[in-house]
Image (cartoon, rainbow, N blue to C red; front, side, top):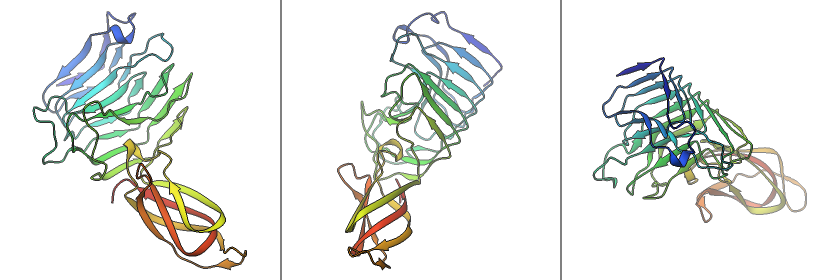
Length: 287
């Protein structure tokens, strides 16, 4: 199905988000092309159950006038293996939701799980939203699922009239993701304005240790995508000299312990002797 250069106008435009019921379009098969459309204040712009979809250059907006009001999903992508591309859209006061709500047996047993989607070069804009609002939401309906070959790059995330905590979130109403199983997740080269957590994977963190210690703790500070664990560390680079407790320059190499801390999103660097200094570390949410 091809839907190009259409405008969808809702009769519920004056309604608050919580009172809307209309959906501009729904598709249950593969290979949908939604290109250069405009949709105004529906409950959802599109619900797509198939894979291999191209959602390109659309503008869909769904806000209302309530300060810190709720927002509904603009796009709902159902099905775990979803090799769709969502690119160059203007996602305005709504979000992209990825779910397996139509799976009769939603608990993960085999297969690719939540995989193969690309979300790139979009404008994600929100205004007057609550701090817990997020612009990309994954909602598993059964336990055991994980992210596999997922790409989120080149997007412009912005919140005006109030900051939001983060752009990415797992809706755990039914189940959480298996954060010990993620594979090849790329979340980089995005811009963040009015967002507290600048999310990346791989994530580069700079750490300075003022007093000499043989154990340095480097937390991700909530910046790994979708609540991921610190399962990998690609590199550690020492920035400037290391010094021992007496102030002398020393040369030492640390080893890294992964998945530390209560949320397992911290790494610990262990040195052969107490040292102070600065490092840059690159951690990942996958091996």
